[in-house]
Amino acid sequence: LPISQAVAGVLCPPVAAAAMAETLVGLGAGSSNANVAKIAIEQRKKKTDVVEPAVISEELLIDGVEEPVRPDGEPWEPIDFPRVTSLRLSFKNIIEISNLNNFDSLTTLRLDNNIIDKIANLGHLKQLTWLDLSFNNIREIEGLDDLHNLVDLSLYHNQIEEIRGRLNGCPNLNVLSLGHNNIKELKQIDYLREFPNLRCVCLDGNKVCQRDSYNQHVLAYLPTLKYLDYMLIDRKAITQAQEGYNLEELTEVREKEQAEAAKKKAKSEKQAVIEKLKTSFLDCTEDLFEEMFSKEVEPENVQVLQCYQGLREDYRDKLNEEIKGLRTRMEEKNDVRLKKVTAFEKAVYASEKESEEEAFQAVRDFKSLKKKVLAQIDREDGVRSEIDEMIKQLLDQLAGLENHLMANEIQLQESIEDALSEFEAKISELIKGMADNGQEFFRRLEELEKGFFTGVSEGANTEIEAFAQTQETALSDTDPNKARYLGNREEMGQVLANFTEAHTSLIQNKDDYMQNQMSSWNKSFFENHRTRQYHRNRQRVMDIRKVIDECRAEIQAASEEGNDYDEGDGAGDLPYGR
Image 1 (spheres, rainbow, N blue to C red):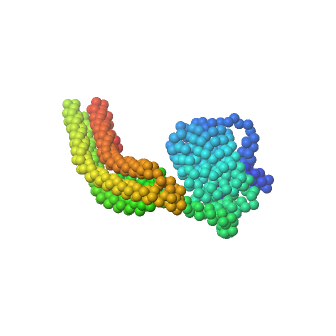
Image 2 (image 1 turned 60 degrees about the vertical axis):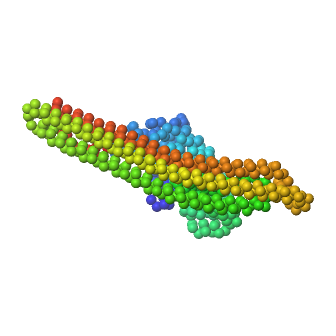
Image 3 (image 1 turned 120 degrees about the horizontal axis):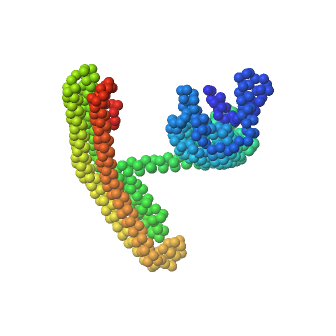
């Protein structure tokens, strides 16, 4: 459909459709339109009927399934919930949203023209792209936080007043219908700037539309819109609104948005840096100096010391050099670790695949032999003793196949375990080297801290003594904080002791964090591999037994009952080796 028709179909309310239908009938429209009009009028009349409130029952769900359509056109009974993509529950007098569990593939949900007063129980419908809740009694937009794929939302003809902050979980909205609600403020419209994909908005019938500046406000604040209140927007009107309406405030809004976007980008980039550092167990070194000298850690007392800023900057420079050296050493070792891990996992998967292919081939060879033998027995009326001998030989070969498959699996499991143990020893040695590098860095940092503390302490004592000797002159030349802090030697000493203790504690915590990161990775890596091998081995053993049992049952059935042999072949349809 042309987009104008599509938008009209989405945004045009049923009441308006019914009114238009009456007009069509009155004007003597064509037969096709007249039929549509009659149906619309019938639906409108039904609204006056007294109907008991309903809940979403299995019967309603069966009738409401629109897609997929059954080949015979009949309702789905029972419903295959995970396959349903479109569900229509319109005009059912439904009082609450419930019983929509297991609709994992649902993309379209129509709950319009009911008496629902609360949006709830929709968070699990992750695939939903179209939601129609028009013509209900909803007062508040809520319960949509997890519907990230929602593109089309209709809340037409409800009792909604507030939209700001209520649609944050639906960043991909393209069509939003909020006509005939209780929206009054133009500021509510500004919130919709947060949805860059929004192209169609309906606010018709709200009090906000009665404001003289409504049209210009919408076009100025939502310049990406293509349709407003059912009408295609003239691009020239948008340009005029952008250039002439509320220019000062709009400029401020844009600047604020740009600043917010830059802040968000910087945060995202910082997070990317930290995630990259995590792969080398180095994320604890990012912004280390800023943590050590944050407002929560750095006392005001030391900032009045003339020696302090120089010592602080010297500390920063030396710490940055140490961090740079640590990262170079750690990243080199980590590259080796990652390469070894990749090569090891590749070798393990190759061994598993080779063993599996060998097993499949052995099964195929036996099934081929079995087919020939059973087909021969089926064709010939031989002596019973000869048939029994052929069956016995086939069963013996089946037993040999079982022993061969089990032995191969045991051999594979033992070889992988040996490889794991050997690789664990190598990786543990590599991790130990990285851990030693980390510990060496933090010991050097502790030495830096001691030098910094000594420098600040000596500088503080010198400045306190100088202040005491020239106190009368100093009091007239300095700010009250300097006089207060330099005039109390005992307090300054205690503050410095607490400051360096906070640094020492932080350094120790960072050291412990890095060591735990490395040991946790080492432990979990090998535990996960051994767990995976355990489950893989259990599955292989079960698959082997299933194949053997099925073959044995088939051979015995052919021997005892003389049933025709099934010509199907190949190991691919069996669970073995999955």
